[in-house]
Length: 389
Ligand SMILES: *[C@@H]1O[C@H](CO)[C@@H](O)[C@H](O)[C@H]1NC(C)=O
Ligand SMILES: *[C@@H]1O[C@H](CO)[C@@H](O)[C@H](O)[C@H]1NC(C)=O
Ligand SMILES: *[C@@H]1O[C@H](CO)[C@@H](O)[C@H](O)[C@H]1NC(C)=O
Ligand SMILES: *[C@@H]1O[C@H](CO)[C@@H](O)[C@H](O)[C@H]1NC(C)=O
Ligand SMILES: *[C@@H]1O[C@H](CO)[C@@H](O)[C@H](O)[C@H]1NC(C)=O
Ligand SMILES: *[C@@H]1O[C@H](CO)[C@@H](O)[C@H](O)[C@H]1NC(C)=O
Image (cartoon, rainbow, N blue to C red; front, side):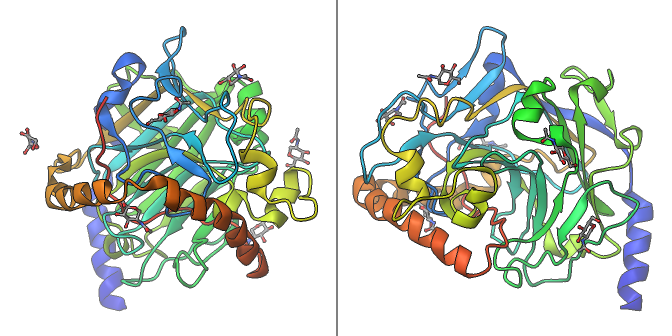
């Protein structure tokens, strides 16, 4: 233990930096150049009732008249029972080493009953190589929930402290020990998610993935400094103030628990978090009788339920001081090849979707029985592949 502390202190002295140069910028019509689709055709990791959108779904993935990127749930189709609703999931082509800062500027985040968006990162193997949840919300909540999910190669905990403004809900980051919830920190700012976020004109989420800590900030629109912009060539995290969440390396073995991370943005519906009936009832009408989240919201007409189920993004910028960051996703080429075969084999989506659609409700019930602690945030380390835009 003494050896570990000494090593980690020296290490952080050596590499800790707060200024990071820009390495990638995604906005407007070139936004989609940096991303790829998931290999799976539907949400097979969190039991959400969605088919993942493809490049054919230009009514769900597009750039609007304000030159902002829209990623939205299908709110025009009537979905028949045992089918799913189309929704977006995109993964970066690149992966990012410690020494990286991700910035998302949005004017609208998806929300509404049954809606579960996440802006997050995942290592190659899940949860062994770690997961960082930067933004996650469910249903009609008014606050963002951040989290880490870690494996067995070390320990990681987070406690309430004056070095962050958020409130710790669950302290232990170990995924298995927390029944998939990970260590969660809740933002106390009403504008950090949902209707309040949009009413305030949105804002900027910043996540720093460094060897000495993983930190997240939220700046509501009126508090966004001019130094944070799509064209900013660098970011200095020391200018952002106290983070909402800080997972310090003094209590989290970041070096052993986090591999290179792939950035992911998605919206699922119901499933293991938004669909848990006790959590749903916190901000939406309680389910009635035999009704499930799926039968109440996902099927039939979705125009009212999903009118706010969309991201509207000014930009996503990536800053990094790691020379090996933004390494090509070719590092995963062999896995991708394997998964390609899996895709064609799994094209019987109608069958698998039907069973998964009905089990989405069942799985919610199981989670509730298990205590409904909330917060499963995703996902096996599935490497993105799929058609490119
Ligand atoms: C999800 O589907 C993909 C593609 O078929 C597969 O590679 C992956 O293992 C599946 N994940 C789970 C948890 O079943
Ligand atoms: C999305 O694309 C799929 C084909 O990949 C198509 O069947 C579906 O109708 C599309 N939905 C929308 C809303 O574009
Ligand atoms: C952190 O502080 C909040 C607000 O005071 C409190 O509700 C929560 O229980 C605390 N978390 C832990 C793990 O003690
Ligand atoms: C804002 O948050 C406070 C608690 O911090 C809560 O009491 C209040 O109802 C929230 N307001 C809105 C509009 O959500
Ligand atoms: C679907 O959602 C969009 C916002 O993304 C909204 O402008 C539109 O009115 C909605 N469509 C329907 C049919 O409600
Ligand atoms: C990555 O793979 C693509 C396609 O296989 C290839 O064209 C490209 O040159 C590779 N890039 C690197 C950096 O190896």
